[in-house]
Amino acid sequence: LQTVSTESFKASDVVVQTLPVDLQAEKPAWNKLLFGHHVTDHMIKIRWTSNNGWDVPTIVPVQNFSLHPYAKVFHYAQELFEGMKAYRGNDNKIRLFRPDMNMKRMKMSAARLCLPDFDGDELIELIKHLLRIDESWVPPYESNASMYIRPTLMGIEPTLGVSPSNEAILFVVMGPVGPYFSTGQLKPVSLLATTKFVRAWPGGSGDRKLGANYAPTLLAQKEAAASGQQQVLWLHGPDYLLTEVGTMNIFMLSRRTDGTVELATPPLEDGLILPGVTRDSLLALTRSWAEFEVVERTISMAEVDQLINEGRMLEMFGAGTACVVCPIGEIHFKEKVFHIPEPKLAGRLLKDLTDMQYGLTPHPWSVLV
Ligand code: PMP
Image (cartoon, rainbow, N blue to C red):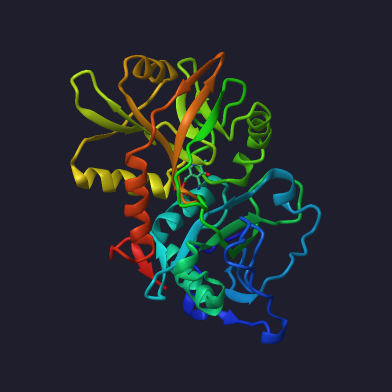
């Protein structure tokens, strides 16, 4: 009989093993950062078994895993991850942006895969500790770059049965990343609205951040690139409901028939949408302005067509940690190309949010490391 320990690891129990300074890697040039190509010297690694619960957390030099070929993660994709950033302000202080939201989502992903639960606040404390150890890797304020943090949890039990894993590893790796728009200028992207591939469906897992959701999107992205578009617009159902764009949530600013302006994004309830931290932040921010209506509702391709034809489409953009906001310039759908007007709101949203992230505007969402 197995007893599953529900007790979390504690950040205060951490065992730290640092890499001797002479073995530490050379820092990359801050203006030549390639996303996902750089890793700092240390990582968080925590083992879990169903018999004994969580081991003490460790911070160790970045290292390879040695896993049995039967490890469940290799066969049934029992893996989930998070994407979050730390920013160095012009006061030289390092801040995380709403890390509690990432932890909340990570725990929901873990529950979806029958992987173990943990205390999100404890993992935030460990991530802060890791950031302090690898502090010199966090790019300077002037570079407009940031530190991308990748918490990950995977089931590694070495048995082939399709069943919950009795062994797991939680790890956190991170590396510096450049600004999404290197020129500082918001460049609108063109989208292929695919009717061939579907990213998420009711009852599926598209609303959780599972590795298994991403591998099947590569072919769709490849086809978009082959036809000259930068990203995929993910649709769902007979009405071609807009769900997400690439790995971003989607927003649409339009004028209603009564002349009022509305910012809309698809709702979270139906399981088609990843609950983005940026999405939530933009909703809260624009609602606090009270300058226009902010609604969570479905948007169909027919509506996009109609809004454009009637001159009521104002702007569309994607929203995510990587770019904050990414304006949409055109949408290729079946035989048609929809042209979206120049972004106006996106620039203001980008500035307001990045000012919070870099600590220029003090805000409770910005958490000091
Ligand atoms: N949708 C998908 C499918 C994503 O992968 C991401 C990136 N995590 C987002 C939306 C945006 O989420 P966030 O704002 O938390 O980065």
